[in-house]
Amino acid sequence: MSLQGEPTVRPARITVVGSLNCDVVVRVPELPRPGETVLGTGADRLPGGKGGNQAVAARRLGAEVTFVGAVGADPNGADLLSWQRAEGVDVGRVLVVPDTLSGAALIGVRPDGENSITVLPGANHTLAPHDLNPHRAAITSADLLLLQLELRYDVSGEAAQLAREAGVEVVLNAAPLPTPVPLGVRALLSTASVLVTNAGEAETLAGPDATPADLTALGPKLAVVTRGAAGASWAERDGAAGEVAGFAVEAVDTVGAGDTFTAALALGLAGGVLPAEAVRRACAAAALACTRPGAQTAMPTAAELSAFLGEPP
Image (spheres, rainbow, N blue to C red):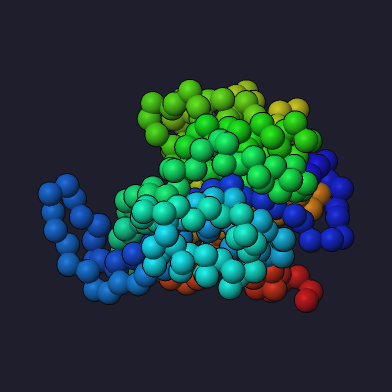
């Protein structure tokens, strides 16, 4: 990956070290307040996890994707692997952990698409740094390593270190971000080439009214802050910066939109697209993901993204 723009002609090779969760999505008239019970109007059982979401989004947009992670030896784990395989993601390096539940998430979604999410890490948190040893080649031969914060921080840190030692750029989506920020996350920031946060996460990391430029001071060469329907802003450590407006769509469900953004951004950068254009395409992909229900089920293909942007087929 080059932040200066060196377009490639072959599909980008992206390795995701991340989480796989089974999502139970419940449609509700309003998100419950503390102590309140809300009756749902429908539910779906869907593939999820930030790692799984970003892997599928990158694959649909044209990348070759290898996944490193863990699921439980339970029906959800079998389905999670099957769902990823059906999308063309290589899950041959996913560990199946005996006597352990797979990761899961309970997601409430309002009619306007706003959501509330509770995550059970399950097998995702059984992965340890030494479990990456058999998969070093998948990390060090990739064009780009994609990380989130749903695994143990020492696992993500080990993956990032292996990548950087091999000259592989690391994209870190700093979510979900705990407060106060753990030392393991601070260490990851110094290893990441690209940092992606939303506005709230940016403030947690760098203080009130934090800008992407403030985030580059923490270590990454490029920082991007997403702002929902308003778009995103970005800055490089060398001083280049910009803002990209959002795309107006009728939102049905915002679950997975941030993961779609991160994957599209990573794919653009891995292909040598300049940051401003990579962020624009990421905003468009995220907007498209909001127009359909679910996380992975809503993510656009490369053809859909091109059509949305008015590009020739």
